[in-house]
Amino acid sequence: MSRPITARKRWWIAGGVCIVALLAQSGCSDLFAGDEKEVVYRAPVHSRAMWVLEPATIRIGDVATLEVAVVTRPDHRVLPFATPDQVAGLWILEVETLPVTKETNRWIHRTRVRIRPREVGRFDWPSTPIEVEGDGVVENLIADGLTIEVQSVVPEYVGKLTPFGLGPLDTEAGGRNPWIWAVGGAGFTLGCVGLLWLARRESNKPAPPTKSRSHGTPSWETALGVIEEALVEIERDPISACAKASSALRTYMDRRFGAGKPSLPGADVDPIVHFGRAVACTTDELERAKPPFAATSRWPRFVALLRQLDRVQFAAPASAASPHTAAREAIREVASFVRDTIPNQVAR
Image (cartoon, rainbow, N blue to C red; front, side, top):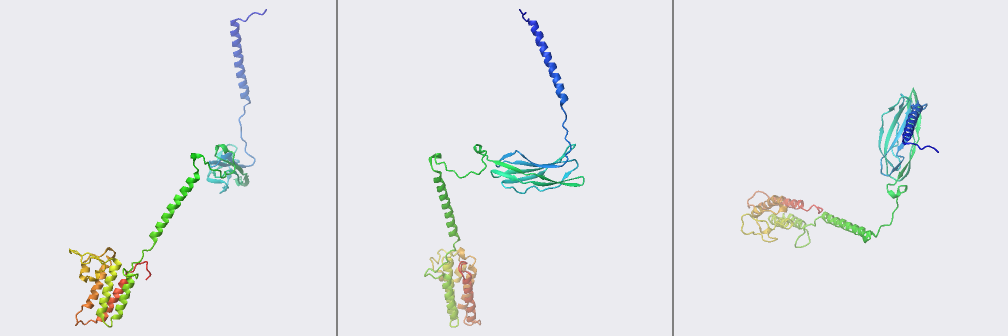
């Protein structure tokens, strides 16, 4: 029969196992440490260039970084080269030349291009010719292009590479057909646009010309007709011609500018109480009267013409001036005044 292992022996056995394990660990680590070797990069025999995309697959709308890395021997430089200006399905945001990474046996030249995809699908980034100068020699390289895959941002359609088509509308949302709201909104908008168009059209319409109250002939045409008759009558009776021209001028101002109701300062009762009574006012009363707003700038000339006609009508019999000449000049001035006050919308 074998003897039972005592507790003291158990402690000795456990201690021996621990010591053996520690020695084994230290010995293995020394063994592995002796096998490690330092990685040393050797100078490349020929320069190399390649495009690198991080990440390899991008989503539409994200900003990605493309880099072209050119590995050369020390003291070599990369001549300036052109990156693609535009690529189908991509926006080119920025081009940046990074500082040269100089190592003992090689130099790394990098140019960074930031892009943003605008469409879903696969797009080819073109190859790029690059020239490296060193030791008096120019070496021509080609950085091969890449195929860039752009995925959708919709979680359930990450791998979809084609655009989404038109789908049926959800008519159960809210219990109502959304076409009702769309058609109603479109009709309301068109109605507002139509009202604005009508309002602008009405505002751009020329104001209708003022016409005589007794008949449909405009007031200026009536006045010019009477003035022409007065010019014909000068040779026979210049005083009567001036009276006719004065009456035509007063009537014209009455109808054209509403001069039939001027207010006389200091008068208790306005002598002109209704339309058509301006012809009953004297020249002095019209001069003292407050003119209508529309005729404010023309009122002084109007009164001056009346006084010029009055001088011919009420001239002294022994006056040396010829009444025919004075009457003709005054009536022509009246005709000129009427033509100058015709509305701009009416062809003269």
